[in-house]
Image 1: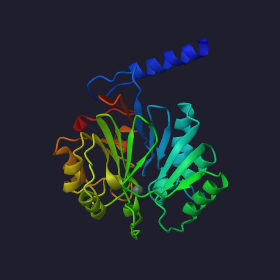
Image 2: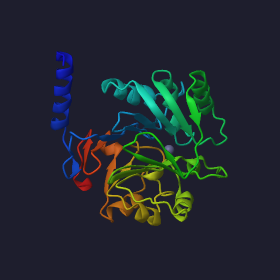
Image 3: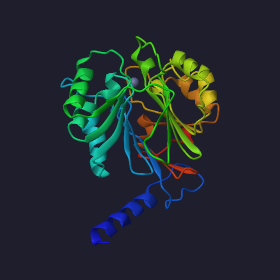
Image 4: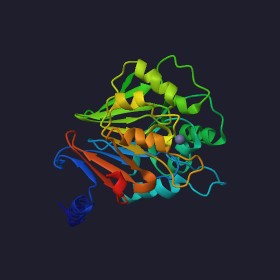
Length: 302
Ligand SMILES: [Zn+2]
């Protein structure tokens, strides 16, 4: 092993042991293959980075941006710098949950900087300049482009079970793009994550009545904690231990709704928020997990 490699390993270990752990269940065995999920703080929008046990890189959404009129571009200002800092130079699987600008805005910048192997899109008819631009770059760069329908299993990593739970086959696209969000459940042994983009209550009901197993350790709260999502029935079916809200401080939508947050906390579900905590990283060996946050957890979050 050369010196550079040894130093790199030492620094990574130091990073692991010195970063504060704000929440944990059991002790993660760092000698085992690990799944890492990072809820990136992209202000008002979603972007979730997943590094699978086999080292595959998955990105679900890319926050806002993509327009010369917008000062903030999550691709340029958050996601690409994070990739550079952590020496990530490819995306194996890119998921565009739905074509709203707070989910695909950072993509034009990112697609021009990072090699992407395969892209999943909900495929609804949509004609915004931003979305068209994304499709153009995807085609120019010859990125594999798939419109999946559920229930389906995606073969990303032999250690994981990845299930597409929405939209179903023969789905009549909703006029409300939120409700066309590609939704995924990712399980690694005993630990699982549910990502539902911005789906709203009526689609939560559809998914519930489809009879799919929704129970998950972690839930990315739908639609930035808006009260149009996270119905009680849905929360109880998912029965998460921890919920994450992707939300920007002082956003014009008033997200998240206080009543939605209390639907979680009243049930003893711990809530982490990107506006309070910054980037939120979860590391799991499939049995236990640790959550580390960029900013300290406030008293009322404990
Ligand atoms: Zn959104």
